[in-house]
Image (cartoon, rainbow over all chains, first blue to last red; front, side):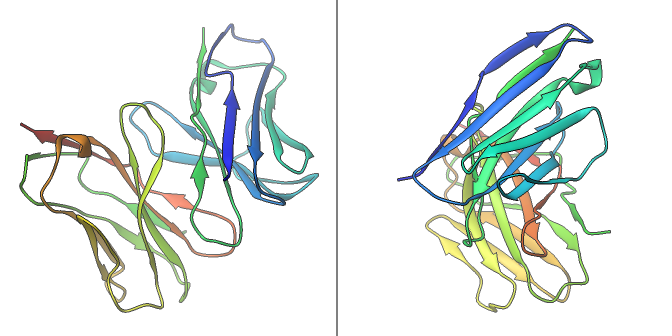
Length: 111
Length: 113
């Protein structure tokens, strides 16, 4: 069966510090991968998606970036965090089937 | 722009009663997929039900069913025999193309004992 992992689960970072969140999927090959941000009381905002290694589509211009160095690994990064980057970050995957499967999420607090 | 609107930020229902959550969307696509996801306090997103736009029959999963009105671009979720474990945030979403999913802002449902 397929599983999706995210780490860390919780992160507190100062403004201006770098960020690296990691997502890995097990039990499948060539998944589509997604990063979402969920601000407090808000819906899910699609940040990036990837349909293959090295292929990244950005949905919202901001100080975040994403990379896909391996087939089942998706990384969300920032060189300098802003207060507005605080939120709950969710990674998701899918194949040709149409529903997405979500990871457990990372709660990021920028102070 | 393709959007999803959930007009009910919060709702409550008595245990064992029925509740309906509303969702409308806007798209020019003719074929797409619709979903309802549940996010309990653990924040793990769980698929509740899905609907293909080309299917006229409304999807049903146990106590969960949808009322899909394609012409009206409406996709409501009905929860029958509500249980305490149904307390969660519910998100309506649709996929108009091949990859992108668009989510609504959610409805927080509280089931009362």
